[in-house]
Image 1 (cartoon, rainbow, N blue to C red):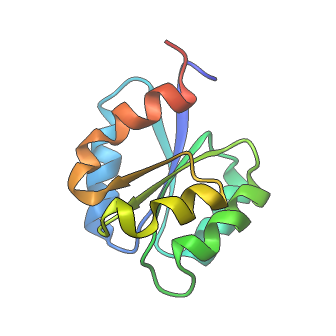
Image 2: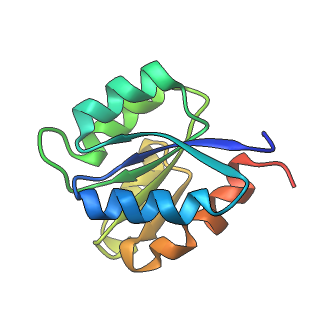
Length: 124
């Protein structure tokens, strides 16, 4: 684990990406190093940037988060992936966990993203 955690934010909604970036960057533990709007771009950026953590939306064009998740973990095997979705956890949490997600949060809890990520990828 690192003192500062690099994060890739993946969501098809630009407003959500911006909000997430702003929420994380007020915390000294995080630096957002990239953003992607779909699963295909997320896989490419994960491989190029090798982030410590990835916040991954599920419902996106071109390739869903569930389709992208194993490819992302192949491209960036040391990354921690936290799934962020508008869907309730009981809908996809088990499937996301099975595919390698470290955690699942709903978009209504997006403000908690830093608190969820901190113990997964940052040193105290």
